[in-house]
Length: 527
Image 1 (cartoon, one colour):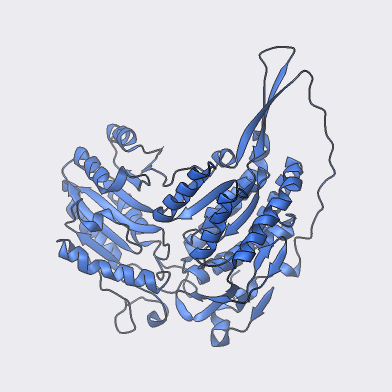
Image 2 (tube, helix red, strand yellow):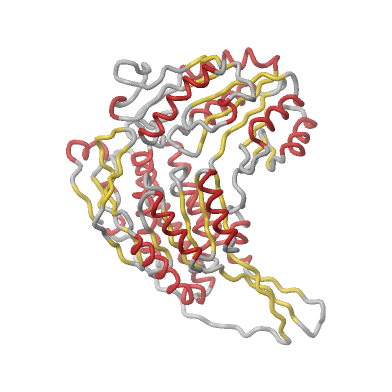
């Protein structure tokens, strides 16, 4: 691992990583580099990475294709053992990697830790349970056996944003690798350090060269990667990000008749009925509206309130918002939210104030950008060095207003009052629920009939305290992940297949100094 001094900020945040593209097992530099800055403190240089060229993209795609035959011929049990070692490595480095997430993307500690835990559990799940789901036997004739086995799709392009830079791609990456596919991954340009670290862990876990290739850069690198779909060397595309880019990728894949999975940016929609558990609804509203400010694909919340509950909800919600803790996630682990991701997100968030007010929405809370002269009393850090904003609450919102129709990246909530559940469902549909990329919906009620109605009319798929409609067009988590990255191949045999013995995979050293990431994050004596 190459690092360089980070000046006066090294002691506070950690040193600067000199990153690289990972192509065919080699760490490759480049002539043009780009900086990765801490969104909470623009003076902190998290890393410097090479901008992948078209030649780099081609090399990565060809490396993935060259590694495909040997990787898919690797026994399934061996592939599972590599992923199990990857899970153990993630667990060993969980604390350091979660701090790196906070530093690089402005994630608060709770979210960063939860993301790493999700990543570990995903790897453990597929390494264990996935091995049981690769073949099935069906027999209609006692003299014949019909076998079906999963087969990999081929070389896969993965393009991810910075919403969940480790969890989202791993939801796709782990089942894709287990199924015997090879991967070219273009991570977010705002989160390359965590992608680099994951690539390092997979390498040490024993993943062969060329099975995963990581190329860094902005949107043009992803566009260059998609050109290889047209040339027939990419057999599936997995994308997490905006709806606009997702549509473009879907069109390219459809034109070339290859499968794709889309995990798209989403809005939160909460429906709070008169019989709701108000404390739970307010707690969730705070978390879903303001708890993910730096996540560019999490777009605040629209909160639909039944009339009788609206006033007490509004009063308690406003009071809770005024107590929110905002600041630098690397300096305080008990924050509600941190900075916006970059200056462009900051500018777009501040612009909503003008057009929302012009349409008649009432601003209940919100004071623009947080600065040294205008900051909350419990703010942590230097607001002038980061992209911080006050939380925003809009009241008297109607479904036809822009504020209810568009995605607002940042800590924002819009309140809409309705008479009953019929009106709430109509509002939900009017605010984009019928679009291809549906919001995530939460319903708060004690009435089972209301729950069933929302399930039926809004298509919600999970019911506990809330109803949730997962955004995107393809399920890639859980057992469905195997279906997204494999196809069933059926055969008929007159006799049972022979038993094939294979040598065990090599056992790499998982405790080497090559995996010491501690210099990239602040020192914490509590670890």
